[in-house]
Amino acid sequence: MKIYTKTGDKGTTSLLGGQRVSKDDLRIESYGTIDELNSHLGMLISLTENEEITDDLLKIQSLLFNIGSYLASEDATHPSLPNLEESLVTDLEIGIDHMEKSLEPMTSFILPGGSLAIAQCHICRTVCRRAERRIIGAELEGEKIELIIKIVNRLSDYLFVLSRFIAADQGVADVPWIPDRS
Image (cartoon, rainbow, N blue to C red; front, side, top):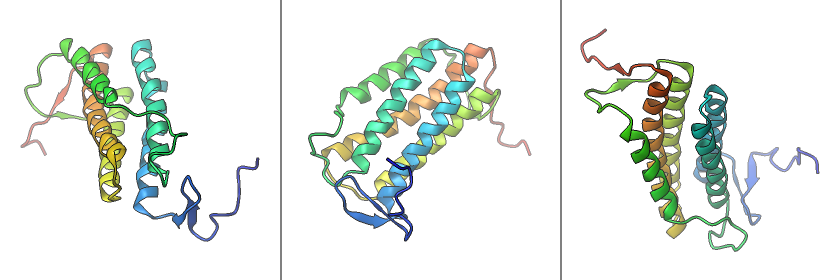
């Protein structure tokens, strides 16, 4: 199979199921942003040496491929789509709670940065938030889309806490936001 098909040369692409849509369709933008997030997570994995973090992020990358397949599908009930369940939201919440147990309470907003891995984690978080906005903006319907929005929302929370967890793991203090600093 060749990587180039030439079918998109006029600005359209196919959804899973064959329907042709414009490449700037919000559905395409939504799963394209999920793909971008996945790539940023790959960079984050390359910047961390913590095996527990790497293992968790690899699972999240697979989850994002599953989410992308739903967003790219005309029929969210198609039997070939991977399984998405409410337990995925719970798993992210458990991960957040686990990391927060070892963190000092936040006393102010924090600035992104401190190390390459921390900064990259914040980039992942902001791309995740954009993906959530794109999914909502695409006005897709269905039970799985509602679940995807919950998963992506919780994932952005997870990534924020992960940025603090990475900072603690690296011995880097949070950088507080000081409102009148300019």
